[in-house]
Image (cartoon, rainbow, N blue to C red; front, side, top):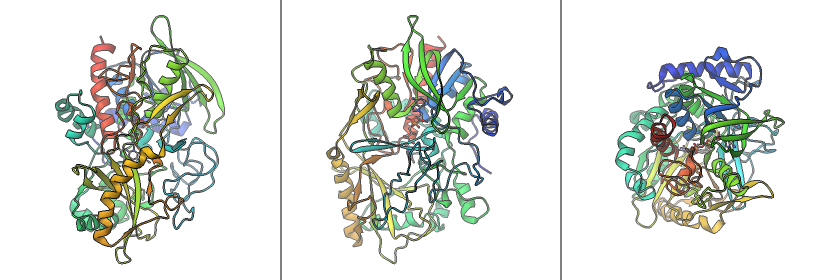
Length: 545
Ligand code: FAE
């Protein structure tokens, strides 16, 4: 039913079989051949692996695939669960409108981005504390949404697969060869991710994107253009959802707590192919706590294994010659800071923890006129954005987001990506043994100013107003959270130009930490393409040498 990209289809097939059988047996160790799964719920970590990859998000998945293809035995350690087993309702992921313990990572109540509707907290529900798929990590004036599980952010995200504008990419990472990126690595990343585009004729007449067409009309009235956004959600599947011939996912309000169908998350693409090489094994519910360096230069990791209800089962150790950090901007930065500031890896650069940004995220809603209905059926996967990035003072790329409430709300919702020059920094806090972010509310103001400049014009041209009831109080702009944490171990600063961590040979960063706080578009294509670029060099010069 799902149409998948072909480059590594045989391996992907083998990997998918391994994922399915691990899920069926409830295993926390996944590898090919699936027959090697022993039937025990936990499988011992090897004492040593030539390569270890921490995390299973974008950077990690690319790295593991390329290591596996090169025949390098590779262990991946993921603190979240494998999301492949149906619950009592027959579904892997819980519904967004009636979430249960599968929704969030060890919370007593869900914390949805739209905090209220007409000032009522309708979206959130009490839940049991459990290793759910979406985390929201709080740091004072900022909180960060993250995916937890085999596939990282790909499990929970909106699937928008956007290649950044070349001029902006050159501005943020001027030392990276843009010819190479745009000629080789972005195309490779998009192919591996299974990017596809909406059928424009269908878009114009379908019900699923009526909400996007309404916003496009409002933007056009103010003189702004829109751009189609590619996706890793299968648009043919979406069409079939609207026709009623397949089970609904994007059209059943599924997005931030996972999609039961249609999405080409990493466990269906890069990770399945990595497992299919036969050289990659994933251990789930294994959280890396510490990185130590042995006198011979090898790394030892201290790993905490838990069950899905948070009970610690064991503390384990694994050695690695080459260690790749793909734990995401927060996870990787924290591991590096802890290692540096507890004296385990004292030679790490002072740049670790610096250069963190929100990708300028700010969310807002507009109230439409009664005759401008957005529709009760809305695709959870956006595919259109208002592109005003050329504005010299206030560049904005505003994705037109759904309000998948299942009923007419007359709300047009947007996640605006702005060019906010403010940067936060992480520091290690010994008392809590964790990384703390310095980011103040006023650092978010440039994002609000930029979004306001654009949407004031749209409101004026359409005689519409902002919604003041969506974010818990009366604020029209919400920038106290981000979906796009970037930075903390920036390329060319905390690492060399290929992600090699300064002051720690054979240690590499491979995820969103490398990007200096902003990409101007949704970031996973950039993270994937940079990981493709970096691992190619590291394999040739360090690992296979
Ligand atoms: P990430 O995908 O976060 O993976 C890190 C993995 O490491 C996770 O699975 C963690 O559980 C695991 N981990 C962390 N610490 C440890 C540890 N100590 N030990 C073991 N495992 C660990 O990293 N981006 C787009 O481009 N398009 C979108 O439409 C989009 N929508 C989004 C919607 C939502 C709700 C969210 C939350 C994000 C969205 N993003 C989107 C952002 C995107 O998912 C994010 O940039 C990438 O997932 C980051 O990739 P990384 O490889 O950096």
